[in-house]
Image (cartoon, rainbow over all chains, first blue to last red; front, side, top):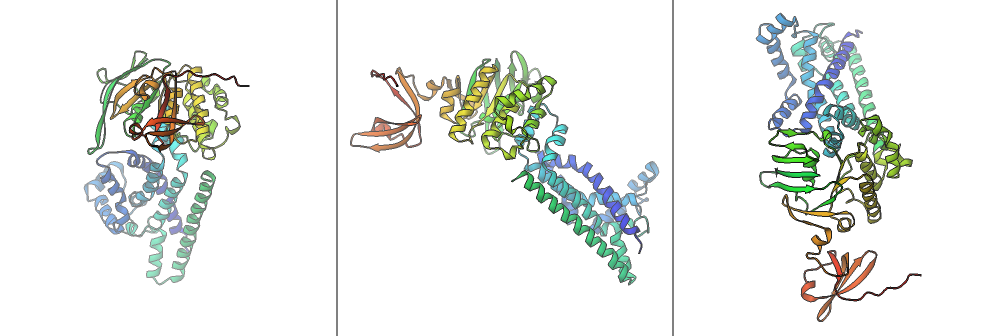
Length: 223
Length: 291
């Protein structure tokens, strides 16, 4: 059996999750505490990947990043990056595709913290950033963990977007979910079964550990 | 001295009202803001602490402007010399009692005072506990101690005792009064609690629809008029019995029930639970020595 697709899947999920964590913090903070008029629009955009067929996202990425298109051509000529049918392209697409899975838990976690807690920190002379890292995030550890794990798991489970923008290039864009499809098409049910079982087991264990950790955390703080 | 002269529009489109303040609070004074819920008391504390920005006017402390719409000054909360205790205490749940205080300390000098403050509010035994494992009264004392870490000149208290039972409340009132006097603070307290006002306040500002509708000493405000009597005690009506021509009103004063005769017309306005002042105008008190 070829381990490459599995390793590629986990690599993609890991990189996507790390980047998502960084970009979702300011987005979630803003969504949780802003009263801006454009907030519903931003909320809608963030949630779109939840309901949109992944092929739609993939299709537009394909168009946008194609070297014949303005954006794709600019990226290739200025930065030397080709996003279509490449691993960096998969990462960019995954970031958009998994964004709500990171933003939603963080946003709801942040909005459960009473306004007075934040204000107490401000009155004591702390900046927003220090308040975020010292007061807010330590109090929403379960949400952080949920966001990280859901983004990771959801990226592993990606299929439509990857197929559209990544294609099926061994070692570059053939992730586990695509490999399974490929093996089934070639009637190699044994191989498909191996991949599937491994994905099933690993995702089961990841999710189980989240629920266990969150349960212990709640016991510790909310006796 | 705190000088306040400001306006601030608040509320939603359907239920808008504005805060209009013009008053001076002397250094060392203990002022109570009293009024119905939604009258704007908490917003006044937020305006003074810098959590809320006025639309217009000025706030100054000892002649230094904290906010001035003309001078385009608006100091952030941390630059204002205030300690704020929230109604829900707003403790940092991820930190122990001691860490909550340490988080508030900015200088080595403030850090070195932490043990003393913890001792002042009698929490030495509990200093390594998380807030969620403390009772309401204990959490309140942590909040008070935390607000004092930076040695503010002004202490703002937003109904800090409203969720506590009578015994603890009375003890914490003593704490607040003690720290107010010991540290020479200027204190502004929001409360509905009548006994609290009589015990603590030098001056009461009655807030109605965002304005000061009346102000004065507690007994002037709540007795309606100055009674030339020799005795007056605040109390709560526990029962009213209407007799033929008079009513007998039972009033809980301290721990005792006192029965007071009232005419029926007057007692129509009264109901059990009302806060009243029992005053005596013309009689000669008798003194017994307590053995």
